[in-house]
Amino acid sequence: MHAVSVGEAQSAWPLLSELRGLGGGDLPVLLSSTTKTGREMAGRLAAGLFDRQIYYPWDIPRVVARALDAVRPAGYATMETEIWPNMLFALARRGIPAFLVNGRISERSARTALRAPAFWRMVYDCFTLLLVRSEADRDVLLSLGVSGSKVRVTGDCKVDALLMRRRSTDVASARELLFGPGTVPDGSPLFIAGSTHEGEEEAALDAFRMVRSSRPGARLVLAPRHPDRAARVFEAASAVAPSALLSSPPPRTREIIVVDRIGVLFDLYSLADAAFIGGSLVDRGGQNIMEPAAFGVPLCHGPFMRDFTEAARGLGERGVATVVGGAEDIAVHWEASLRPGARERAREGAADYFRTVGGAARLSAVEITGVIGR
Image (cartoon, rainbow, N blue to C red; front, side, top):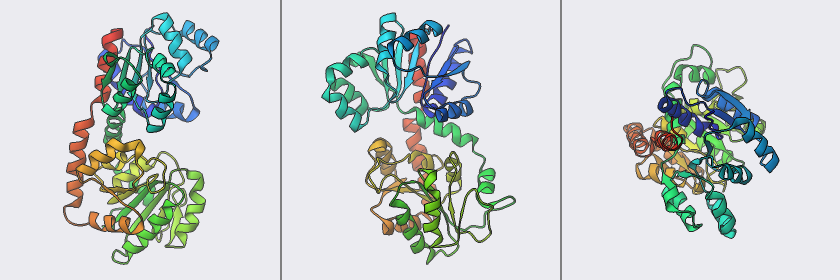
């Protein structure tokens, strides 16, 4: 039985699509996840692209051995940071090819690995191929003593996933979700502060207050990174302007909408005139700035973007992303994004960026099928 076990649902989705295409449907795929949320997301995004779905086995030698005896995989692929040493050691002993796809090694993970290089070199040596996102990820592996012949820089599969999601986005449904049935654009600016952490909503609200002085019809969508904070964010928003939770019936007077649901923010970016991306004014490593960029939305973020360093640099160089230091900078950016030509320049810059970094899923699928066959 050919089987590839894959986690990290969003990155796995385009990979599974490419594996299906290259295998012509003759490459059976077993998809695993470690959490209920990951399982549900994978089932929703990648429906029809795998043959069976399971929870990932505990990384305990006897459990791993039973799982491999039952599955008898021809190959194993794991995504991004999902490194399970006992599984890898067992695969190596059995001579089963193993692949790290969309390999991502954060600064924190690199520091951890470099404190015990011999152990982590042994772990990474179990992989047949290490398909990583960037040269920086490759350099970390080489610094651990991993053979360069095992490492390929293929790019970021999440870029391919974003573009696939963008093509399937229903803008009319997103507008109805936000403003209610039968609504049509009225030309008023819409700003989104997405994936915000505590301390960032205040900056976004202050920026919105500044912009409303010259754009009284403007609206703001506030999407806290953790929806369980939505009630508190709603209280703060209500002190600035008429507000409502996204899950509430849409009143005609609301100017601020606080998102209290998961899985909707990406589609809402299709409606935005400009965005601020959170996790970046406070030191949380940044959130995914490629999501609004996929729709050509001009965006800004704070200085803390270590989890999206390459994307921040690439989109910044193309004029899509701007670094801000607080509320006043956000307001200036939002105002500038409404000027003639700003949106078109952002679309062109984002399109150029995605042309440069896209295609990782296909490159990865070609590498995998080249080893295990079709």
